[in-house]
Length: 447
Image 1 (spheres, helix red, strand yellow):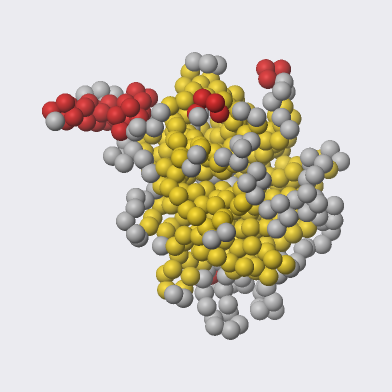
Image 2 (spheres, rainbow, N blue to C red; image 1 turned 90 degrees about the vertical axis):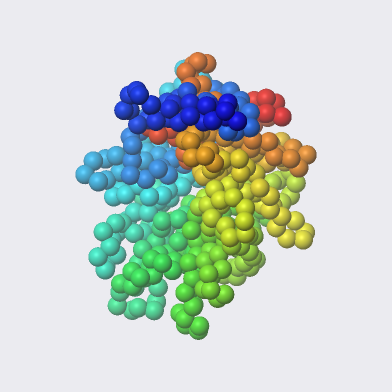
C-alpha cells in the first residue's frame, strides 16, 4: 500500500512540477508513466512524415483526408487573418518518399473553420464541401450555405449546393445550413451528402432543433441546386413536433450504392429519448430510420461498409450514458440479420474522440482514435489503435516517431485511417506542433 501511495505522489509531482518549473505543459515523462502505471494497453511504434504545418485555430476539427492508390488527398484550414480562414488542398504521393513535392494550393477563404469534407470523383478529381457562400437575411454573422469547390481546368471552381431554403416563409425563406456534414462518391460518380439545416427564416430558436438533410448530384452537372430530402427532423405541419437531428452525421454506401446516414438524435416523443440513429434510403425521398443505441450522448461518428463481410458498421464516441457503464468510451456496431450488434472497443481511459473506422483485407475492423486522459484524470492526448480479430478487440498506444527517434507526445486529432496490404496509414493532427502528419505501421505488429 505504501508503495502505491508513493507512486501516486510521484506522478502528481511529475504532472504539477512539485518544487520545480511553473510550466503548465505536461511533461512527456508523466505521460509515459501514466501509460505504464494506469493503462494496461501495450504500445507500438509508428513512423510519421510531416504533411503540412498549420496554426492553432479556433476549431480543432480542421483536417480531412483520403488515401487512395498511394496518394493522399488532404484538405485543411489555416488562418487568413482578420478572423478569416483559408481552405487548403494538398496532394502527396506516398511512393516518392523524400523526393516528394507536395501539390499544395489554396481553395477558398471563408469566415470560419467549422467543418468541411473532401471526396474524389471516379476520375480522381478532388472536390471539397464546406459551409460558406452568403449570409442569411436575419442577421447571422457567418456564411451559411453548403458550398462545393471542384478542381477543374487547373483551378478551383466554387458552386452553391444548398441555400437552406424552405417554403413555409415566402418572405424570408433562407436559413443556416451546415455545421455537421459528410459526403461520399459512389461508383456511378454520384455524390451523396448529408448535413444539418439549423434554422430557417428568422427563427434562430431552431438552433436547438436542427433537421438532417440529404442531397445527391453529379459533379458533371452543377448548374442548378439539387433537390433536398429531409432524412429526419421536425414536423411543423402535422404534430408541430421539434427534434434535434443530425449532429456528427456520417454517410457510407453499401455495395448497391444505398446511402446509410448515422447521426446523434434527440427525440421529443418520448421526451428526452436520445442516442445513435441510422437512416437508410430505400428509394427517392423515403428513409427508414432505426435506433442503434439509446440513452447515450454521441460526440463523434465514423461509418464504413465492410465489403469483405458484406455488412455496414460504425464506430462512435460515447460521452454520456444512463445505464451504468463508463462515459467517454469508444463503441462499435455492425449490422446483422437480427439488428445492430454493439460492443465496447475501449473503456480503459477517456478515449474514442476523432475515431476513424476501416477494415483490413480479411474484413477485420481497425479504428484510429484519441486517448484524452486516464480515469484518474492524468492527461494522455495520444493516438490509439484498436484492432479486432477473432471477435476480440486489442488496443494499442501509438508512439509516433519522427526520423526513427523523436516522439511526438501529443497526437490524435482529426484521424483518418487507411489499410493497404499489411500496413496501416493514418493522417492526424498534433496540437503540440500544430502540424498534420502521415503515420504508418505494420498490422502484423499489432496482431
